[in-house]
Image (cartoon, rainbow, N blue to C red; front, side, top):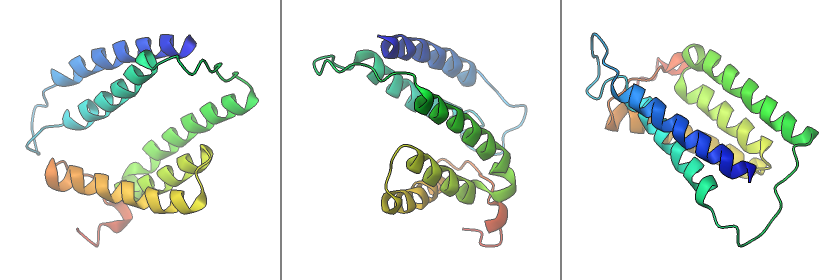
Length: 149
């Protein structure tokens, strides 16, 4: 039941934040879609995940996992990782910081080393080209700036 409550609150929060992001207009624009594309895309993905939590079938009738020390550790680690990711984003650049973030998150949630090490770079590079080439949203390259993709 608490997952559904969380899902409902998260959907409402995402909808509110999407409406704020949608109405945002920067005084200058250096990209075709403007600075609102990234938050709207992320909030849409988060809202879809929250809708899944809200509407998923209870046929399996599985009990919710307890909020024990292991779960609290994972939540605290996620918060720390997001903070480090946001801090390292400009300095390291989008691709390196996203690779490290994706690998550590995959390992935190029991991903194998092989899958984590393959999916982390694949995700980071794919997202970089999606935003840089398709959406024309410049992302910092940081330590890779000499490569200029």
